[in-house]
Every structure is written in C-alpha cells, then in structure tokens.
Image 1 (cartoon, one colour):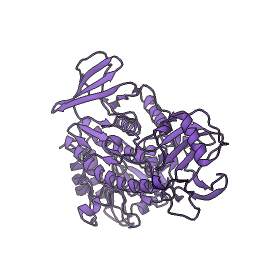
Image 2: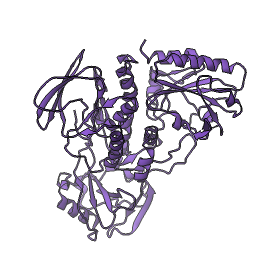
Image 3: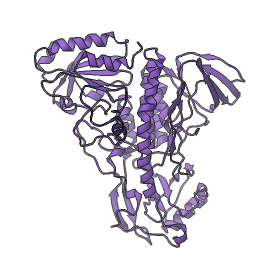
Length: 560
C-alpha cells in the first residue's frame, strides 16, 4: 500500500509508548491529502469530528498536481470552498512550442483544453490550475475553522480487524501505539508515483516541445515561480533530482543559456506506474485516492478522481456511523467507483503513451523538433477529450439508484459508459450528475439548485405541474419524507408559476423556477409531476413519480 500524500487514514490518541484503547464514534479519521481532506470536510458537514494523521512532519510545498476539473469545482461549491479556490486558481495556460535552435521564435500556440462555454446547467465551463499544496491549504483552513487539525508525523505501520473493530498500529515520535476502534473504518492514501516535476523560480518562462518535452507553467497569477515538467525516454530521471543537473539539462536541451534559475522549492522525480486495486474495501477498511488507483498525470484526472472517491464514500460513512443506515451500504462504494476508475485509467494511460512517445534511444543522436503543423506529434496536443471534464461520470448501473423511466442498455453496457457517460443523448437518468439551475427564488431570495444542495443531506426536488391533483401528491411526498430519519433529507417544491408558489410547499420549502432552468435541465414537462432525489455527493439517486418510487430508493439506504 502506498503512503504518500493522502496518508492511510487511522484514528489515534496521543502516541506515548504502547497501549490499547477503545475509541469513541465521534473520532473519525482520514488522510491528509486532497482525498482525505475532502472526506473529512464531508464528515464535518455531517456533524462528525474526524481526526487526521499524516506521516510527514511538515506540509508539502510542491505542486505535484495542479489541475482542477469542472466537476470538482461543483463539489467545492457544495462544501463552501468555491470562492477561496477560485481566488487562488488561475486559468489553464496556453501552450506554445518554440523553434530550435534558439528557442525564442514560437512555432505553434494552442489550448491544452478547448475553451468551454458556460451553460445554465454547467456553470463551471473550464478547469483551472491550482497547486495541490495550495488546495490542501484551503481545505485545512476550513477544517481548522471547524476545530479539526492535521496531526503530523503520525504513521500507520499496520492494522488488524475483526467483527468488533480495527486495531491500528501507529508510529509517532515517541514510539508505536496500538489503537482499537469499533465501527467502520476509512483508509485514504494519495501519492504521485508518476511525472518528472520540479518547482523553481526562473527569470523567464520556456515552453518547448522537443524530443524531450520540457514544460514550464506559472504556479500563481503574475508570479515568478514556475512548475517545470520533463517527459520522454532519452534521459535519466534520477539525475534530475539534483538541482545543478536540472539546470544544466534544461540549458543543454533548450539551448537557452539566458534562463536564470533561483531557488528550487521542490525537486523530485516519479516513475510512471498505472494500476488499481481489484476492490475498494475489505471488511471495515476502505481505500480512497491513490491507495486504490495510481495513474499518469496526463488529463488531470488524479486528484479530481480522488475527491470523487471521497464524496461517494463520505455520505454513506456518515449515515452508517450515525446508525441511520446498515453497513451493507458500503458495498455500493466499490460497485459504483470501480468501473469509473478502470475506464479513467485506460483513458489517461492512452494520453500518457502519446505524451511521452519519443525517438527511441538508439536513434536519439539529436533532439527532434516538433513541426508546427504536426498535430499528432505529441500528447500535449491530444488533451482534448470531453470525458476529462468529468461531466459524463455516472452511476446508472448502480443497484442503489432507481428510475421510473426505462433505462437504455444492459447492466454491462451501462457499466461500460460509467466514465464517458451519455453526452449528446438528450437524456437524464438516475445515477447521472445533478445539473445546476440558476434563477431560482427561495423565500424571496435569489438562489440556484447548487445553493440548495447540502453535502450532509439528500435533497428531494418535487417538480409541481399546473394540473389538478398535484398538491395532494405533493402532500403525500412530504409526509413520507417526514418519516425518514431526522436530519437526513430536505424537501423542496419547485414551482414554475410565481403566483402558485403562494400555495406553499405543503411540508417542503417552496422554490420558484423563475427562468425555467430547473424544469429544462431536468427535462420536466409543464404537466408532469416528478420527484428527483439528489444524493449528498451531487448525483441523482432517484427519478420517480411518487411515494412508491421514493420508498423503493430510500428503502435501500436507511436502516430498516
């Protein structure tokens, strides 16, 4: 098991000598990288108090990952972290190749990702760049506001589990302690076993496409600190862990001896290693992030996939820990995440193969220059895959979701499209991402569906038509919701007619879809009574026509 940035998550008390101690249910713990911190934030929002340990004595300053995809921005918005993240992030930089020798005349300029268009249901059209260390800092600050701090220099060295709980062996500065906890456990581990990166300062940027690709990008808007990445076959990556050799290598390959480097804040190399586990959990132990899957950095999927692991597991973990759902709910974590990650690995591995494809060493007598018109010469030109935005990720194949609408395809066919999705099909089904809808009024205040969604609650949206009898069906739905465990479900009635909203939500909060975006995004007809259940992780759990469908969905979740 890898233990790098998102450390394997285990709970502990002060480590002093060796001992065994039962842990209370309020002490839930996760790792200290993006996957673990997101999981901790979800648990905090659910009223639980995680305790976080990490092997390293200090926080990392290197930007081992820097891409935030559109779907991740939506999760951060739900957690209340969007303003801080957007303020710190910067747009994905334009790529440019330079002609050699000289390296000063541009040969080609292009977008690493095509620029997306903002739509009402997709407010975050484009990804952005933000170093992993900066994003972790934002998450830690939010956790600190809730009284949760990361405990440093605490390493998990082993664990055993049985029917009653898990015994974790944790090494601190004062030795090893055995800690026993009862109830489900969560393990998170995120590292970066791939890419050749260094963070340093330079007097001027250089973005080259060579036989050996050297890429530099600013780490902050207007800053003079750059991330420098090198890919290819014709060099020894071990040597590039030395600062002097890195400078010499860049000067030699680019022939730009005018580049002046300052202090390197982080310098290392990683060996590409694309693989995944065959299951995401065993007994009371679960894997998130790179404890479950490691892959190439191409496509910017790693950190984004890790936080989706966490959001999927977190709400299930919270319900079970509170005694509101049976442990069998955990089985759906593996069922839902495994097909997505498997397909993501195939996609990013293919991108990586294109990116590092270089002249064989036997032919590498001189650096090969990429010609401007050669569209397929380098993988840097091939990061054009709509699936990378993660909008298509879905759980249509999951036994946990329920849809009154006929589902297209067999179970295996739906699993095969777990990552790519159904872009352009004009359909919306249970298991799909829940679309955004702006232009709503809630109690006279402007809001949107993302403003209503809660990472600790299921959200029930009752779309009310104008036809007779709809209010009676609405009251039936709200009565059923009231019978579910307290603090687990929030209902809203969606009106299209502002005047009709005066009738009230009949047990739900009344929302006016002023601009019609909600009805349009969820494909609801004016005369259609429809109930959409949105899970805490932002995916649609159910699309039903009444209480029977709701009971079928929630009957698979709540403890009977």
